[in-house]
Image (tube, rainbow, N blue to C red; front, side, top):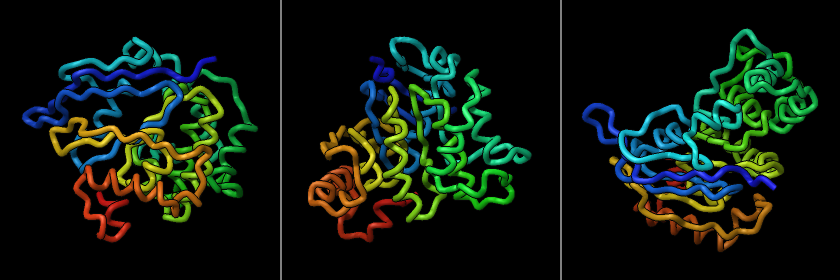
Length: 262
């Protein structure tokens, strides 16, 4: 059974003019896994994600998805990306914005799945609303539902929960992963939140300051399915501290500073 594609990043460097964004990055995404990418702002996390999506070219090195360039998978509609900006079409309703992803990927309409995802992200009752009628956090939830509706084989998430309130963020962190784990999906999450990375990921890749390179890979051996109650376990806090130490985060600082710093 297909367990999602493998992703292999080898010796990747990226420069923008005089800015050296990434330097000699090696990274492997195991089929069917969720890998979280954490690191200081400006270290190239989002740039690396965009290269894996086939939306940015490498300066040196290679990115392969199942042994092929990312464009091959993207051309089949098997890649979905959720960015920090929702990018909804203003004239379409919530339902229409989510359903549009199926059309663009060449998939059959699936009203039941669209409706179910809208309920999952907590927007039931807003199906006919347009983006201008929604808060920023609500628009981002539409974007997440749109990202998941096509059942992508490669799911790339760039701070997708950054615009939602903390309570909604925690709920989505628990409720959304089972949706993509029911299907053969390999996922990469870029986040500034260490607790979010520990709660969601199978492994956490810690990056250095710019030019970004991989400092360490931390396996997350917490039981699945993950539950909100695990946020209070000793094992959870030990992993948060380990990643924080790798990032030189003061473990005595307020949690919001460690979890959501820009």
